[in-house]
Length: 471
Image 1 (tube, rainbow, N blue to C red):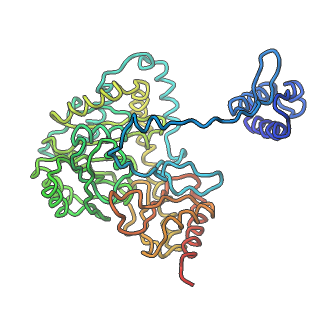
Image 2: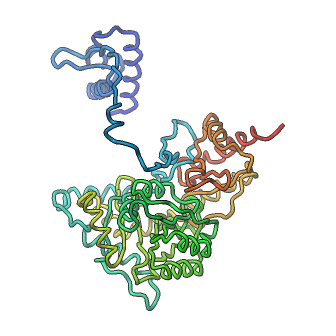
Image 3: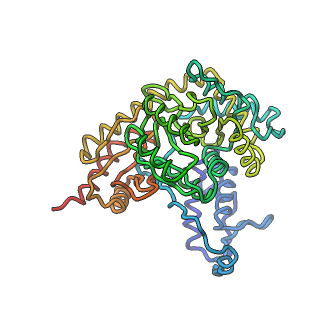
């Protein structure tokens, strides 16, 4: 079946429909086959596309006709205002990272790696095997497939130093993606109306999850080396918070990685206040110069709740994450997860486990490291050459993004709009701050599609920024 031919037929028929009266009958399949030199199957696919778009309607045994336009009657949803009542949650703005870039645009905004950076062959093979296995029809345990839970625990335990007991498979819970994991952790360990300490800036999705859980976000300043432990201690003392959410390895958006000394100081602080560190290891598989060192591997006292997702590194279609927690915290997390979704699809769990236990998985990660390094250096070099006013505080040693500080006088909304007019989509840094931004920033993704277009995109960014310079 030729997709290009089908698209050509759809375009031609849409032009014909635009001039035809409602109810007009489209040419027969035989006539369209002759007109476009396509197969009947391709013609039928084009007609199904037009039906799905609401442009035409099919009458079996009669033909296909131009659908009559119907005037849309406005609906009054005012009754819902009274039924729902006032909202006490300030929802964060929708994130630019979730936008679909227009065709032909240079996409520097996304939070996901490009398809060519994914282990596509492994994923397709794993889905084929999972469809033939028991997971296609069986209900998995609420906590997750035992072998997958064991894999998450073993991966974390491999980094545990001598004298620290590694986690057991029973400490792990499988959840449908890291976003679900964050929501579950915030509900189970923090709760509505209670304070949650977070790095500032931090992952916008964590801010969204905190808002949905009703938690009161308290920012802790964090820079290229991570948070200031003294500020963290003061925040714990001032607020009485029971949890601190952080990304110790390749933080989104800053790319920061904690030093071993900082990890120990944060862990000591969390223990001193009898609190939790909710560690988001989202970029575990995206180390460039070296692998991550999870803080959770240093703790066997139950103070660190560890979250690792496979969605970005395996496939966006495989929304699977693991939480490793000990003691009552693990039971509360499992109870919340069970209430929300009962269990995670056994097929997706089987696919994830299949991919990460294949010998080719490690080979893929080694190749990925080199690809990410080349892309990072390409984008960073283009910024230094074409936008010298954009300051990179540090070159990240892993992750997917560069965090660029712009001149204080930058009109960020105008810059984002001007970039899009020039064919470049960027993500404004304001979305990653839990309070007022400390300055204008951009988060630029170097794992997006078509890295060959990065220099052109950065040149356009430079032109957009130059428009704001005083003349």
